[in-house]
Amino acid sequence: MFGPDNLTEKVIKRRREMVFIILSGFFLGTLAILNILGISRQIDLSFYLFGSKIPFIVFVGVLPYPITFLCTDFISELYGKKRATMVVWTGLILNIWVLFILWIGGALPPHPELGPDNLPYPDDFNRTFFMIRKLTFGATIASMFAYLTAQFVDVQIFHLLKKATRGKALWLRNNGSTLISQMVDSVAVVSVTWFFAKDAINITYGETAFHAITILILSNYVFKMVSALFDTVPFYIGTKWLSKYLQIDPNKDYQEDASESQE
Figure (tube, rainbow, N blue to C red):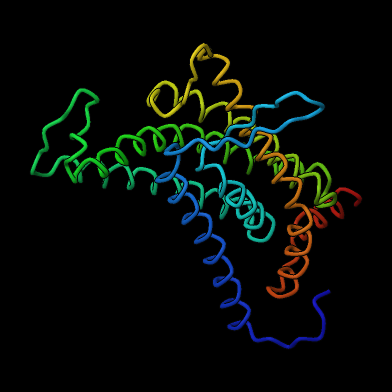
């Protein structure tokens, strides 16, 4: 099924490892960026529809987030559940590493004098670091809870759907796993952020915390949902091309299971 290319086993193995490293690198690099930027800014993308204002507010960290699910879907499809799970665990270790660097960076001397907002005074050059540290701590803790839950849900549902459809309906496992896991992620990350870093959620005068949190959850989820739907075509094209380039049959195990069941 892979064409007339006569590639040596060494070349094929090198290609597979190279692509795996690239996908894992994008996944882990994006994860680090979104944890550091995370909740440092809320972006207001509200719009008017039929004369009514539709609130649409997302954290800046959510912008690169959909790429993490695309990467794990590629890894799940091409390399299997074990490799995808391994990358998810590596991402958790990365979260802990980010927290450790932030902690030790603030614990080492000199220790600046803190103002009423529990940050160095505005004229202290240390203020920028401690402000980033405060926000990133909240974002990373929230991300760790949401990340573990959502990514494992994504991998589990992806393979559950793949098994149920015997490797068919690629669009179903790509969108189904991502849409469900990103709802879990949106609820978890906003809720935990509110618990650990209330200052990061901007609540306007007269607005209740429940309303602000609900708008953030829905806005973040809609953004991720639309992104997931748009990545279906790249996922189809990428899977087809990479399957040939890497000489991998993603449905081999399921085709063998079907043959055995028929016997």
